[in-house]
Image 1: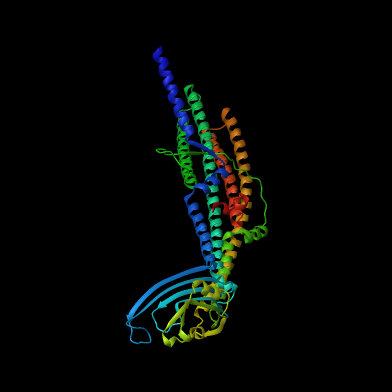
Image 2 (image 1 turned 90 degrees about the horizontal axis):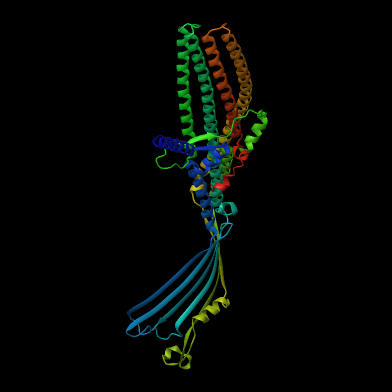
Length: 517
């Protein structure tokens, strides 16, 4: 008795373990959850998102041309050489020099460059008859270089930035296109899985009817009310419907694999198959939209069309730049500088250095030279114009012609895509209308198939028809149920295709691509 109880408990635990394992291997998901999961986990989506992030960084990098540039320079030099003149020095001529320089440069919005240079150096040597030694020299210089023809203007200067922004916009539109395609693929996989599961139910229902009929036939043969040959007909039909069940189950596995590939769900180690149980059921609420309305919407929202339009803007920028490069290179260069000089002043007898007799010194340092420079004690300026006329800009317009041809090509691509969209919209609107009518027709066909089967079943019970006729109508009813389900699924897919054709899939799903980068 105890052994029997232990065996029952063991079997119960084993059963519960299997049930829990099977349940734990299932996930019930709605269509919205599948779409969100795919956008979060799908590797191809991640690749496209990285493309937009790279484009963002390119825009930032292009904008860095307006960052100021700072250059620092330092040089320390000591030289010794033989002296060949009594005026220079006796024996060996020595000189020590140290130079400091800082240059701050800024690109201007209209293409010019402003440069501020601060120079300071110290020179000490053993020259005779010097009046200042060591000598400190400073120079504060402002230099403006401005192109007046070629490379002049806001748009020309910011060309790389504008081009990078256009490229970023195109990348974002491409991301939208990819996301919409991914969403449509998820919807297709999801509804196909729903259909395969509903089709399995229809096939299982058909198989149950065939088995019930076979069981009743066996009983009637036992009591002699039916010929044994009727059994073989029913058995053949049961075998056929069992094969249909196998195919329906295979379809479920195939459609599940397609959806799982899109979802890219993490699976436990050793886990072979994760079952997806669709939460949503397809509906067939009628949606009415004219081709004109759909086309107008598509021209606004279609990301592939917007991408081509942005490319046209980019090509126009290239044409504008190429036209500018045909101009002569006329540059204005304006300089303003303020020098400052200081150092230890040497005093000679009678103020005459030729006497060679030093009677004293007046100290001076680097700060005094800086002070003179920043006080603009000595003001200097210059203005220069430089005209450079490359011969290739006179005799060859190849780059400009290439830019214009590229622009024309881009404009033709926009027109071609508009025609393609027109055809897609007309086809999508027509498909929605057709699929809805098919739903209504198949619904009516299924209702009539049910009536025919019930009537034939009643006739069979009173011996007015054959097994074959009943089995045939059972098969027709199962096919009608599957066809109705397929029609409803196709109608939902037609609506999804229409949304994709109009470019509003993301808008309807409240998906903002910006959240992904």
